[in-house]
Structures are given as C-alpha cells and as structure tokens.
Length: 355
Ligand code: ADE
Image (tube, rainbow, N blue to C red; front, side, top):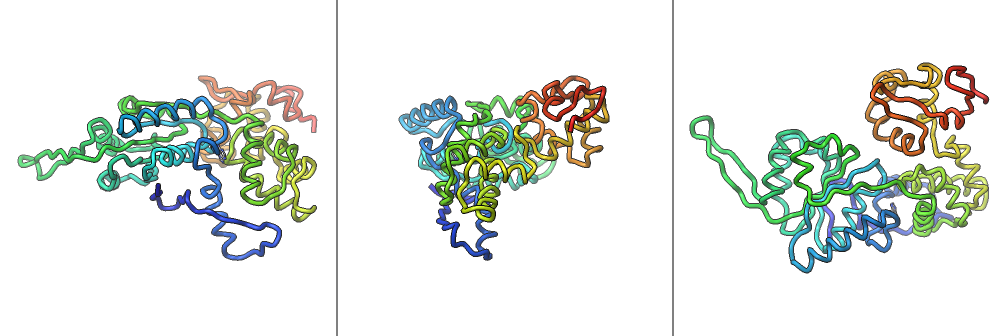
C-alpha cells in the first residue's frame, strides 16, 4: 500500500535513541512527521474504538470475498480520535492505495475532478473536514459516489453538451467533526456512518505505552495512566503530552516517566487533573465571572476571549460537554455545578473563586 498526500507519510519509520540525541535539523523534521510515524497500521495495533473495528473487519472481509471495493464510509467525532489513522488501517487491510486530502483543498471544480480522475480501481479517497466541501464540489461528488461517473459539460449556452466520464470504482472515506453540517444528500450517499468515541483512561494508557515504546521512552504503568488521565480522552493529545513529559523527565530526572514525574510535568504545563488547559479554564471562567454562569452565545464568548469560534466549538467544547462541565442550551452555553466545583467557585452568582 502506498499513501499519496502532501504532508502525510504513514510509511515513514524511524528509530530514535532519545538518550544520545543532539538537537539538529532532523528534530524539526521529526516533529512534523511525529504523528504520522507513530500511527498504527493494523487493527491489532490500533487501540480503542472496538465496536467500530469489529464492524469494519467484517465489512472489509465481505468486500474482499465479493472482490468489490468497500462501501463509502463516513467517520465523525471530535478531532484527534483517529479518523485519518483508521482510514490508513482500512487501506492497509484492503491492500489498496489511499489518497488523502481535505475539503478546503478542493475549492475549485478542477481540484475535485483532478483527484477523482487520478484514482485507480479500488483505491480509497480520504476527504477530511468533508462538511466544508462547497456546493459545486458536492454536486460533482454525487454521481461519482453513486454510479462512478463524472458528469462534465462542454461548450456554451445553446451548444452545451453533457458528457458522462466513467471513473474506476473507488471508496470515499469522509471525516468530519460536524456531522450535522453535512448536507442530507451527501450524508445519504455513505453506506457506513460511524461516530468515533473518546478513549477511556485505560485505552489511552495503552496508546501512551505503545508510543513510548516506539520512541524508546521508559515509562511506568502509573506514569502512563497519569498522562492518560489528563489527555481528554484523545490519543493525539496523549501522544503530544508524552513528548513534553519526556522532555521534563530528561531534564529534571533520569529520563524515566514515573507517576510523580508525569504529574509534576503536567502541573508545570498548566494541564489540570481533568486535562483542562488554560483556554478551557478561561472559557469556563469567562462564563462564570462575566455572564453569571450563562447562558451566553458562542460568538460573544469567542469575541471576549479573542479566540476563533471554530476553535472553541471543535477543540474545547466537545470534551467540556462530555466531561459534564459545560451545557449547550438553545439560548447559549452554560457552566454546570461540576465546573464551578472543579474551578473552586462556591456558585456562579457569588463569582468568588476559592483559589
Ligand atoms: N496513536 C494514535 N491513535 C492510536 C490508536 N488508536 N491506537 C494506537 N496508537 C495510536
């Protein structure tokens, strides 16, 4: 299997001996490729999402028996839970190539036409952030997904002709953080639609142990669990935190990540025991202190915090909602009593922090 994309290179393998590493240009390259290099390539090494994995294994087995490409798949859920990784695993299991792109890169009709025409039989096309696809691109995709045809027009006004250009049978895997923003007709063309769930602490601690092993980082079971607890149920965050905690362990101790070292490193990074960072805390505190605990509109909050609405909606909110610290109501966002307790307030109206 090979993967064709601008930045992504699942195949790149590496070996790092952390203890003797000097800082050099390769370190920057390593950082860029870090996430891609540690991506699991098989269902066996992909931790978590067990219900989805079982469904996919059966679907893949059946497609192989029929000698047909897989049905089009849509993965949705918060960022960092492994949608792209899973697409790579599927391609590997099917023994086919995968082309990876994202909706904002398919702005002009010729972008989507070009990529569709470059596909070979059985290949997988992965479109990230598929909810951001424009109307024209969507219209081009419909016949391509349904009948494996491109409807092209040539000529002008009176002489306009429609041409049906056949495409090889391919599988589209769409990924989105906002399934609700996908148009009905596009959503209906996916045979399989699945939500990716946040990971449990135990699953995240397995992800952390696996990544630490790949990076030759020594870590205890409790050390892995301490990082897992503050990783917001998200492998991408867990994998980033390992690197930061490993830096701390190397500078302040002997490089080994223990529970104590992990907790100290994460405290230094201002990541609290629930995994909230300073942006999350600012968001909650703003609602409590300036808006009496809410409800308040997301645009107002974004403007007051100087943050992008999309960052708040896609990055901060999913975990705060899941953790029961924030509520979405028709009139805006509200903090919960659990958020008040977590941040040390007696109640929203007193607006008095216990810290
Ligand atoms: N790294 C990132 N996501 C992972 C997963 N689901 N399993 C194993 N390693 C991972």
